[in-house]
Every structure is written in structure tokens, then in C-alpha cells.
Length: 487
Ligand code: NAD
Image 1 (tube, protein in one colour):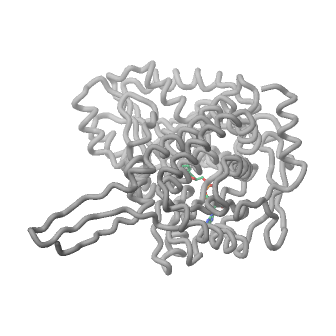
Image 2 (cartoon, protein in one colour; image 1 turned 30 degrees about the horizontal axis):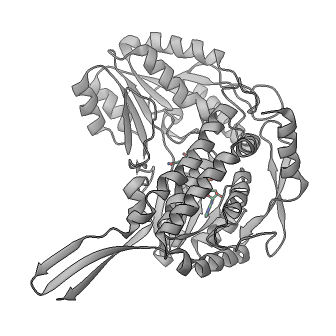
Image 3 (cartoon, helix red, strand yellow; image 1 turned 180 degrees about the horizontal axis):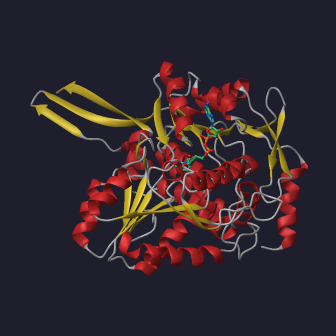
């Protein structure tokens, strides 16, 4: 990507405030107030963004409701539109990648794969559009028959976090649209820009006005208005566990259908017979790539005491060599954290870890004095410590020793979260046994997190309430109706 192209994108982002997209139009919203979005690499203002309020959410929900009856009717047409969006996302991949790097601080090599995945989200669900029509028959006897049909739920409210804005939003928007719903998206206020570019792409794909809408703004304002809007029967939320709980309470009055994808404190359990080279590689990738801001990060490594020293030495040596730098530098492995407040929070945990007696082996220090850079950090600690119990959402790994399988399992499950887990061993039986007893929505054996889109994605305990992916999204974004008739 050339410097000229980057300059052009910067110019486009900063030349006028980033708008909402409502009813097929790019608009400033009812009050016309704006907020600043910062460039995490230097904390300078990157863009001005219109700040949505309840009036804008109401307008978007009405536009989505008005578009719903037409949009739900033809699965064939929806499939074509989704394939078109996938094609256009690929066509605009460079621009999307640059915007996401500048806005979210994620590094180019990661962002490129995220943009490809965003396109894949649409092409994958395009193929599912017609399956929403599948039903079953239940013949009773010679005189009665029942059959089921699936229908879309209506206007879907989609609320997303700042760590992987484009991939995570399209992962919900694509199935919602494929199955005949219309959408109002509220992106995170710390990374609002790719949602705006996605609206441009969707306009270029010529979707009927109102089928897809974006309202920018803050969670407590625009997000909350979406949660409480009576015309929005479904909320798909990705973000912090505490926010998920607030949304559950605030939507209770309307009995909304909720999918909550929340925080994690996922363990990698590394047994003494593990392929240590691969386990080290994968563990490093899972905690330090994505700037550590990855919901399925293995932020705890539970390591058998006999290989603890070797594992720690290997990780420390590698962590010290990880290249921290500007997200658009193709060599960079870890970019800046999203926001100065988040940097403070992560550095706060480094301090807490030391105060509670964990041994800081390497990193966890601020890098430079501009931007939110931090070096990949490694602690050896114990599972009861706050750095092992609470989600830090930064490049900080806590290694915890164990003596035997029972202790490894007990420690792995002894957190409030249950999103993902990783098991490293050559003992096949043990691998399956441990996976079965782990309190995690998703477990990978001898592998980092490799996603296959038909499989269920989601967490147990405080990590979430639902699963999305393949048929699980079909269930979530449709209503199942039973129709009975005498013959
Ligand atoms: P957050 O909960 O602060 O915000 C997420 C979104 O919710 C934002 O758009 C925000 O504006 C909105 N919001 C905030 N308060 C709201 C309210 N009262 N009503 C409605 N909307 C509201 O989360 P974050 O800091 O943006 O993201 C980081 C978190 O996301 C981490 O905990 C991470 O683990 C989690 N996450 C989970 C997954 C997953 O699939 N399980 C994926 C990515 C991130």
C-alpha cells in the first residue's frame, strides 16, 4: 500500500464529519453534534464523527421497519445482494484495511485477513439465504398435518466493540440480512470508521434503502436507544460482560431476543508431553497478535511444572523480539492499543500483577511517548491473582504452573469466564477428556484458534448466552412457526 494511497484515505476520513447511514442516505442526524475519533498511534484526532441520539436511532429503526416487508420476500434476490457486497468488500479491501489500521490500531497483516473474512461472511451466508425457507412436516394421522416454516425476526439491532470492528459487525449483519431481516448497526465509538465505509459499499451494491442502517455514537446514548427501541425485537451484542448485563436488564421490558458475545480469560493448558515448539508458537500468537485485544486470547497459560522453566524462557525470548510499531508498517506485529484510557487500564494490570506477587519476566511497559504502545508482557503467577482472573484485553500473558491433570482442569475452570480453551498434549485420550470437562464454549486441541464458519461460536458462563455461526445463526435470526391443518 503506497504512502499516496494512505494519504488519500486520511484525507477522505478527515475532510468532513463521518455520518450516519439512515434510509439509504448519509446524514448528520437530528442534533448534528460531533465527537472526535483518535488515531491510536499518536492520539491525534483522526476524524470527527456525528454523535447519534435516540431520535436518530428511531429514524433508523423506522427506515429498517419500512424496508422489512419487501426485503423478506425474495431469498434469491437477497443471495445476489450478499454476493455483490462480498465482491465489493474485496474490491475495496485496501481502503478498508487502511481505515481499520488507522482507526483501530490493528496491524496490517491482521487487518488484511479480517477484511477477507468480512467478505467471506457475506459470501458464506449468501449460500444460506434460501435455507431459511427449509421446514419440517409432522404428519399426525390421515386427518391432520403440521409443518414448520422459518420467518425473519424483523429489525435487528447490532452493537459491536472496537477490537475487530469490520469482521465482527459483518459476522452478524450478513446472517441477519441473509435470513430476511433488516439491520441497524451501532459501531463502537472508539472505532467508528469501517462501519461508515461498509455503508458506502452497501450503497454501491444498491441494496434497497433502509435495509441496512448505521447510527454512530456512544453506547449509553445511541446503543441504549437501540436496546430500548420497541420496533427492534432482536439485539446481537458483542462487548464487555458488564455491558452485556446492562443490556439484558434494559431490554427485559421488551422481552428482546438477545445474543451476547462477551469477555474471556481463556486458558491454554500445556501438558508435559506437548509439542513445545508448536504450543509456544500458538500461545504467543493467541496472546500477542491482535495487540492482545482478542476475545479468544489465551491470556492464561497453564503449564506443567516440569516444563515451566523451558516454556517461560521460550516465550520470554520470543516476546522480547516481537516488533511493536505503527499498524501500517508491514513488519509490525503488535500495534498501539485502541485508546489512552485502555492503555492506562492495561498498564494498571501490570502494576497490580507486581503488587500481588506475580513475577514479571519481560515487557508490559509503555513504548515511546506518543500513542498507546506497550511491549508484550509475560508474568508467572497464580490463578487466584487478579491478572489471572480478570480480562485485561491487552498483550499480557500470565503463566501458571500445575502438577497434574486434575489441578490443570480445576484452575482452567476457576474463572468466571468460559469462552475458549486450548489443550496441548500428544495423549489423544487425555486431550478429549480434558476438552469435555473444560468450561468453555470452544476448545481447540493442539491448535490455535482456527475458525470454521458453520461451527457454533460463543461462550459459557460470563462469556455469553448464545451461539452464532452456520445453522446457529439461522436459529437466532429467524422465528420458527408451526402451522397445523386438517386434511
Ligand atoms: P463495550 O461493552 O464497552 O462496548 C461494546 C459496544 O457496546 C460499543 O458499541 C458500545 O458503544 C456499546 N455500549 C456500551 N454501553 C452500552 C449500553 N448501555 N447500551 C447499549 N450499548 C452499549 O466493549 P468494548 O470495550 O468495545 O469491547 C471489548 C470487549 O468486547 C471485551 O470484553 C472483549 O472480550 C469483548 N469481545 C467479545 C467477543 C466475543 O465474540 N465473545 C468478540 C470481541 C470482543
